[in-house]
Image (cartoon, rainbow, N blue to C red; front, side, top):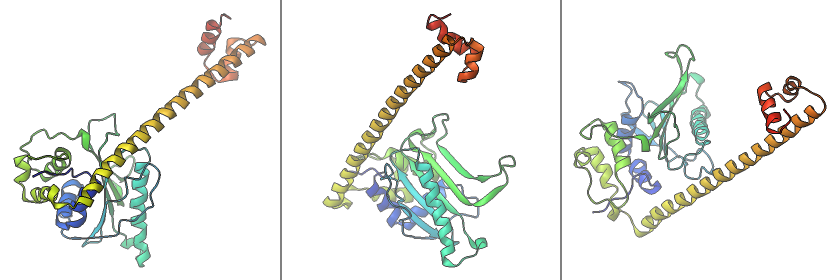
Length: 291
């Protein structure tokens, strides 16, 4: 039996968009819910919160649901990271929060919205932490917060289970997302030992998909590869333009310093005119053979 990758758009939506009990287990395991606040039931909501945007083609809301208390949950599987993604997540969550008023609710009746984002790229490069929880908190009294919006970003490539025998459901679900690869045949026994995770794995059996669905599965990977290439090209072009602009700015500054020196300005006066340090001005003059 061969299995498909659970991070693909087709498989992710099949597992978590068609099986509410699996989604409920997933959310309870990965969200920062306090004891007594765990989700006990949920129903799916339309996921069309925003139109497609450039370079966010593959970050459309995958699953949106509401539980029996009125809390909403937005889940996205993001294969490619862009700097605009956090703003997109904020927009989606805020829109879901505000839309509650359309039902005639008063402000006091607004229920929290949780945004869970699984990201298959690293984006916080100054830390080894893979789990990032954001909320609206007081800058100094961090114990005080404004309830309403909660955001979780998980950098999947950073996740490494320190103990493969760890049975904590959060670890098992993250291993499910990171260890099951395309066309795998043999799966970890400890993942299969958990009934809930095993059911989610069985949803990934290749034989459960039609030829048309498998074509869509492959096309998604092709599209992701093309999108990654476009992003890399755009970044390279941006860096090149930035370097060229930096060089041009440096040349213009050097010319300005030399002209001012030719007019009789000393290094201190040139520094004031150009906004540079006196040492920087002296270095330009020295390099130009004028000192």
